[in-house]
Length: 206
Image (cartoon, rainbow, N blue to C red):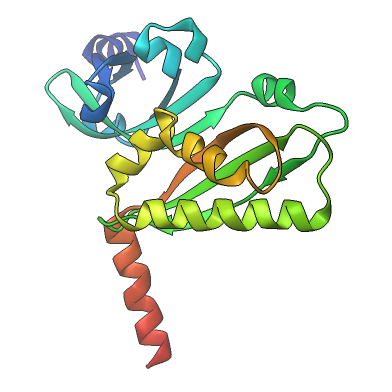
């Protein structure tokens, strides 16, 4: 390839402004470059909730978005992951207390499959039966929450802290809790992917 061809390729690259989903007010997430718009699709970008809200106290929450549409010089994204930083999670753990985790996969009203991982931290050491009861309660509440919420509504309740507050309120009567957090949320499948999986399952059963 000649130097002129290489130079021409570099000149043909364009910059695209990456924007958050509408539920995050289309905040600018950064920029990415490519010589073809199609090459931008599927790229991921990570930021913090603090950067989106201009609030440093929210920097312990990381958000990951994936580009799913390009129009002109703008690249639009969808939410795919929410997680707390390791340092923050580590700071919550205390000696002589219990850490109760759950891994829950739910389906929203608009057929997005999402995995949610809440964690409850007790004030003192709980016994096995108390930990089991807390975990069961967290699973029930998360499943009930997802049953009547769209994907966007579910993400909002997690990012804004409403779901973790509800979990704390319902679980603290089982055993005294110091804190409840949603440590990770992952969008596992979109509606069309869920539908395709269901069709495959039906075909196999038939």
